[in-house]
Image 1: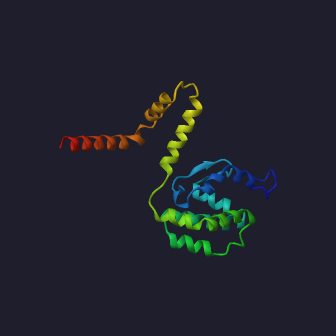
Image 2 (image 1 turned 120 degrees about the vertical axis):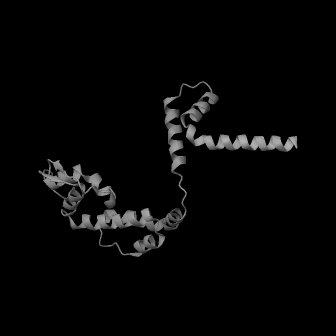
Image 3 (image 1 turned 90 degrees about the horizontal axis):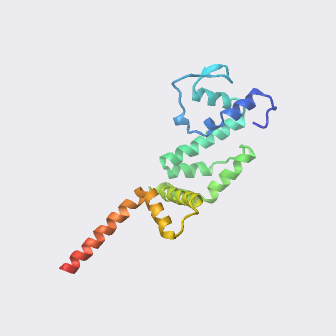
Length: 178
C-alpha cells in the first residue's frame, strides 16, 4: 500500500479491503455480487482479492505462501507444514521473513500443536473474562464476592467440575457407609 502514491486508487483499495487478504481463500464468498463503489462494478469477495493481488507480484507471492500455510494448519497436516518450512522464501520481500523465521524457530511446538487435538482457547477465554471482570469490578469488598461473581459469569466452564465433585463426595459417603 505504501509503495503507491498517496491518491492512487490501488492504495485506497488495499486500505479498504485488506481484511479480505487475511481471510482464508476457501471462505471467500464467490457467488453473490455486490456493488463496490470504489471499483465501480458489482464484484464478489474472490474477485476483489484477485484484483488486489494483480496490483503487485510480491503481494501475490506472499498471499499464496500465506494460504498454503493456512491450509496446512487447518488440515493439521504436519508433513505438509514441514515441507513448507523447508522451501526457500528468499524471493519474498523482507517483511515476510520474520514470520518464516518465527515458524522455523517454533516448528517443534507448532508440530506438536498440530498433532494434538487439544487447545487452550477456552482457558484463555476464561482468563480474559476474569481480567475484564476485575477491571470493571474494583469495588468488590471481599474476594469471596468476586469469586462468586466469576463463577456466576462463566458458569458453563465450571458445571463439569461441580458435577464431578458431587460424584466424588457421594462415592466417599458410600464407602464410609459400607
